Image (cartoon, rainbow, N blue to C red; front, top):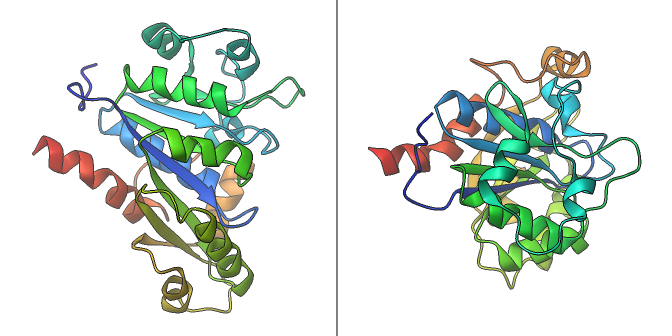
Length: 243
């Protein structure tokens, strides 16, 4: 397949939740699948060692591919195309998932080396990021990327997102919010966005049926979904480059 972004290094989109369970992993999967469906060579990186494995969100837990623990044993520069080819693949998305067997070790150095290697062999890298600073901040400081922070419409989530943003003040990476409308949320979308003071990439309305499908291992369905408009907003930059 011919990549859309064959003349430049891949974009890197970092997705992080303001709090646990915000829906960051689901959004990361949706963006990666939408990208792959449009013909991009897309990589989804699971950087959350305690997140249970993004392969479960993909519905691809039986797929085999290289693991973080294997990459940690490699010193120096990682071979770009060989790494891309060694990743597990599901519905066109090449992915590197964390293990549930306690053998995962992702240092900031390893994360950065993996991203740098993959940027030369694909069109888009989507990073499902943990909220811990020790891995995320070195990536923001080293890798040219953009960040989506997923914020449920709750006071606690807005406070957590604001705390995160205060720690990112010294970084020049573009940051946009994605608001998740929960049926139990007490804030309006506007009241959720305004205190953050950053541009918005869109809003996702929580859907119980979709959440149940993810728990059953169905993955993120193609076509119309709660994530469609946000995915389109994120991928518009690539479409405009090609046009």
